[in-house]
Image (cartoon, rainbow, N blue to C red; front, side, top):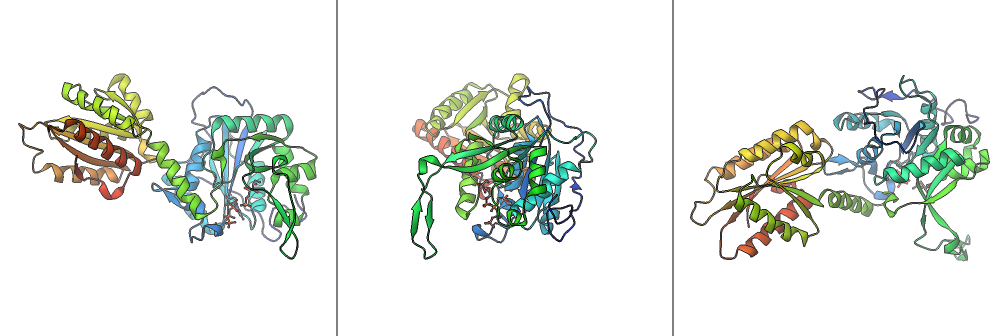
Length: 433
Ligand SMILES: Nc1ccn([C@@H]2O[C@H](COP(=O)(O)OP(=O)(O)OP(=O)(O)O)[C@@H](O)[C@H]2O)c(=O)n1
Ligand SMILES: O=P(O)(O)OC[C@@H](O)[C@@H](O)[C@@H](O)CO
């Protein structure tokens, strides 16, 4: 390790990581096709304060749809079957908060260690922890992926490329084209020279290193590197003579840095959850007609509908992949079908990761009374209970009218907006199309 003793801070001993409540010794991932057949662990530096957002809460703990940003990033890595363990380095004052996030969102594979006074020191603490791994089923990794905790949109196929290149080359990193030209300034604040933009790239994350390279790099680097450095690839080259393989990544690798990035991240998360919905018709002809009309209406809103009679048998697949459900009820204004969806969702526990939307669309013929007087109260009561399980229930009432197409188009617009916004304020409301 560096000259300051066996840790990454000049004056503080490194503490053994604090294990999560649920030992992650047994990987619970399915035997998925592995693109990577060697042990890979991840270090997520999350020890910063997010000053550039101008917010009191460090950006990694800012929440989207009720869930902290760091939980989305952890989930992105946990969903990769060939990643054996994740170490998160957080500031000491945020350790309890981090443990609460891990427990609330049932993150596994995760170990929390103290962050450092700089990003490099936090990463170094994480790498140290990997070397001191005590969990029986988690051995020392062949490759260490380092990824800023505030870059939530990372995908398995790119992680695979980085991990494979790191194993072959010793180090690998994500790059993106520069958006702005890089210039050098004089001490008086004038232009000294500009760089030819086409010859340069932005260094992004994830980055990958063999464990030996990154641990050696941190053993040999200087205090100045720890204090002022921002580039792990540089440490690998400077101190291990390892020239990183650079791989152009997708535009989704950007880092949440400013307040506007938080809004952008929330918008992306909401958009990702709102691309499709499962419409349950009960097999009734009128309900199926309405569902078909809705499908046309929402397709104009860039949404796809999967229409099924129920959630039984093969149709239960919707429970495994869908975040949005529309129950079409004709005439009968009881909410038993919605209750059946809640029971099925409960079994899948999907709402732990993202709020699930259930919309009850009630279609009443002109010759029938609209929903019973009790229905608005009943849907509010059901919604209030479901909300505690992160399931958002909304109602839309549609009456048969001579302006059928316009009414259905309204239902499509309302349903699409409810799904897109997942507004807590409208939960339990019975809206009129
Ligand atoms: N001492 C530090 C500083 C930063 N980071 C982490 O490194 C990543 C990228 O750093 P950056 O975007 O600069 O985060 P902050 O330092 O929190 O932001 P700011 O510079 O605006 O304070 C973040 O996940 C951040 O939490 C860290 O682990 N330890
Ligand atoms: O300086 P920041 O802490 O905001 O960013 C840290 C890293 O994300 C940044 O240096 C990348 O270019 C990857 O090395």
